[in-house]
Length: 181
Image (cartoon, rainbow, N blue to C red):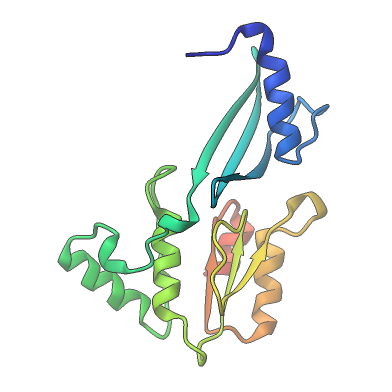
């Protein structure tokens, strides 16, 4: 069931208000989030708005924090692949890339890996846009490109923080890739 087309602009405006987006800006993509309480549960909605030739297109993704699987055995890896992945993340050096389409479990896999490695002796810092789930004991940094705080700037500042592990949520440009390597 779809709402009447005449309601489209009003619905888009309401979603943008709830996601703390600029309702008058219709020329550039915007991303935000909405937290909704349903009974005793808080549901986190990720909102993405892009301009199209037909008007704004809105996509909302549900992030259910209560269903976050932090045990790596629950991620769906085959036994051999899981063993090799754990072996890779437990190395004292190197880089591990996690790739896949939207909704495929990249963030869940990364958070699960960080949870496994998170001890008092290990300093972990992340650069994320947005921070999807809060992990106790991990220094999570929210990227804000609107004010010039990019992944590249975050990574440069991280190097002065003596981290053991750095997690970069996304590598969007050459500069970030070069710093990461």
